[in-house]
Image (cartoon, rainbow, N blue to C red):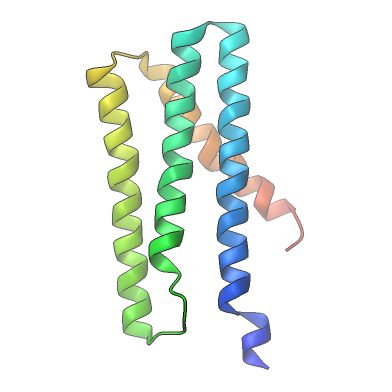
Length: 127
């Protein structure tokens, strides 16, 4: 009966629903910047929001094994997944700001809005 409340498949569905919501919110923020300010700002917002979504996807892939594991292994997979997520996000920010010379404000707005809005949307929706 315990598997019904916290099954691996339910965790996988929740993680991938979060990633899907993050991608949708990232594209909406990028579209808003495209119509309001232009292409470079929209690209910056898309990279900021997309980095959060891709980082979450990498974290979900790493953290959720195909079969049940011990607590120590599950914790190590979660920590390594979180580290990979931060490498993806910080790497995308570096590339966007240092290499592509995109404006920082839309980049950070995309990053923060996607992370916060997707969390709130998933919190309000029924599981």
